Amino acid sequence: MLHNSGFFVLAHNIRSLHNVGSIFRTSDVFAVDKLFLTGYTGHPPQPKLEKVALGADKTVSWEYHASPVRLIKKLRQEYPKLLVVGLENNLPKGYVATPMASFKGHYPLLLVLGEEVSGISKKLLPLCDEFLEIPQFGSKESLNLSVAYGIAAFLLRK
Image (tube, rainbow, N blue to C red; front, side, top):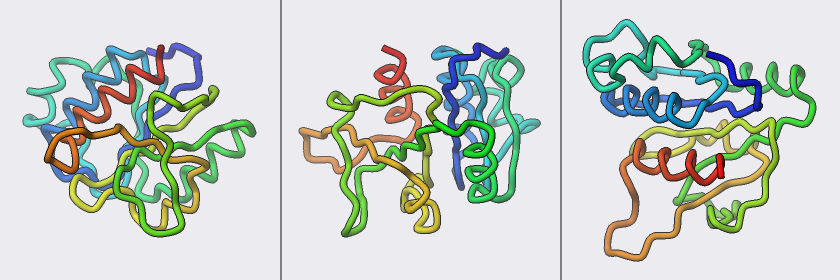
């Protein structure tokens, strides 16, 4: 199902098949043009993933690539104006995140999601043009990855 808006998502090294299934469902709801699964992220066919995806693994266009670095370089060639945006709330020194509500991006856009605990890998950080964070007001320091992705996808589609 291709919607031709230029909204792409890269999910790198996602450990939980439940999170991957949820990412598929959210990608369907917000009409992501293509979901790229990289590294050790699980991909269909996987019963645990399919149980959560509820069929979205059949409706969302997706590809698996071992190397996210090669994939981003390839996408930048295909889409010269591609904006690569990392969703991250725990950036290392030298990187700054924009609060989601203040973001003024454009399509084509590739939203990068990183591993549940350690976030976006150090080799992917320099490939991102910007970083987004979801402001947090409670005592917890982060959201579940699939929940954070749902909030970001909604705001990026507004």
